[in-house]
Length: 365
Image (cartoon, rainbow, N blue to C red; front, side, top):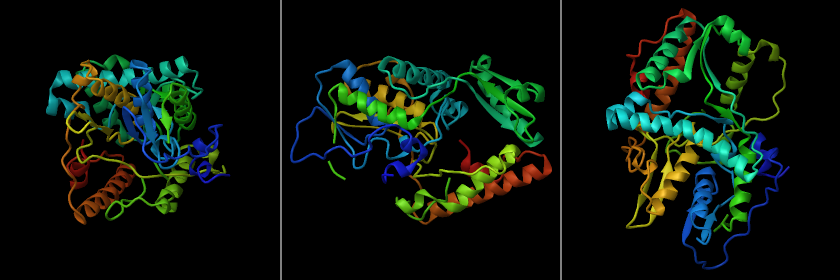
C-alpha cells in the first residue's frame, strides 16, 4: 500500500492512481494559481474553467489531490454551517442569515448535480440525516434547533421523530427522539476529490511546486498527530455503545488530521483585488458542501461577477485572531475536557446542560 493510500479508507478505496503529479520545473505562466488540490481549490478551478475554457490555471499541491481534509472527512455532504443562523442574524441581519442557510441547501444539490454532469462516481446519495437524542437530556437541544429552523422559515424541512418513527429508520441504543431532514447526502470523499481532480485536468487545468484529537501547543502540523489512539478508541467505543450488535466488530481503518477553526466559527470567502489573493476557509466539519459553495463564490469574485453568492455575509468576513499561546491551547483543552464532563453528567442525570457554564459560553456559536 502506498503512503498516500494509507492515509484513510477513502483514499485507499478511491480506485485511482495516487502517484503525485510531476512538480513545476522552473518558471511557468498562468492566469490563476491555486494552492492546494483539495476540494476548495478544485471546485474553484472547475467553475473558473466553465466561465472561460481558455483561462490558464495551475493547481500547486505538495502531496496529492485529497491529501488533507478533502480525503479524510466523515463522508457527509450536509447543509448548515457550524455558526448558527441566530448568530449570523445578530452579526449580519435576518435576511443575510436566511440567504446563507439557503445557500447551504443549494450546495448539497450542486455537488450532486456536478457529479452527475461530469460522470464523477462519488456515490452521491441524498438520503437525509438524523440528529439523535440518546436520553431525555438531548431533547431540549433538538427542540431548540427545530424552533430556530422554524423562526428563519426552514421549519418545513425538518420534523421531530418519536421513538416508533425513529426505530423505523434506525435503531440506536438509548435513542428516544430525532430531528429528521431529507436535505443531506453521503458521498465517497476519495472518489469525489480524485474524480474532480481528473475532471479539471481534462478541462485543461494543470495540477503540479513541490513536495477531535487534542489541541497541540502552538498548533503544529505533524503526521504523528493524525492518529491519536485514545481518540480513536473513544470513537470505537461510541459505535459499540450505540450499536450493540457491532460490539465484536473489527475496525480496519482509522484516520485523522488538522482541523481549521476560526475563532468565531464563521467561514470566510474573500478576494483582494490589490494583491490578487483569494481565500475560502473555516468550514469546521461542513467542508464537503461548503467547499463547493466556496469554489463558486471565488469563481465569481475572481472574475468580477456580482451575484447573489458574492452578497452572502460569508464574503469579506474577518474573524478575530485566536488568543496568543499558551492561552489558546489552555482554553481549547479546557473546553474539550469540560464539555466532555458536561456530556457525561447529562447522560447520568438525564438533565441537559444549563448553557451557563464557562465551557459552554466559550464554545457557543
